[in-house]
Image (cartoon, rainbow, N blue to C red; front, top):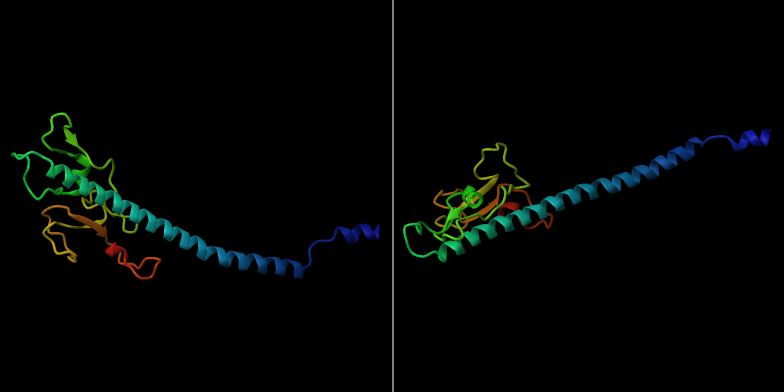
Length: 163
């Protein structure tokens, strides 16, 4: 009966301390990895969103350049606002009608808009007449978009607003 009681005893304090120490070391190694992964996901989403909007702007310009001369062909050939990419435009082709370039608003994942009525969708814009390093939008048209986040990317060299 005494041998049976000895086999039913619990864990010693030393075993518990060693186990908790090992779990603490493992947890402290995992937390930085998960935060790094979340940041990497945000960077990937930023790159994808920039590519999507810039492709839509380029497609808009290409479609404008193929338009026949006429009263509809006015301006620089770039959309006046980001909303025009979403709403579409009539390029004079009766068969195509109103051509849309985006299905939904594309937001900046690192600097989301605070107001749903934000017509820039959290991005900063450049027009075709602005200087390449301009930090203010001239509001003539939308030539380029870039992030408002001034943080440095994971590569440690480039800033998000320079992508």
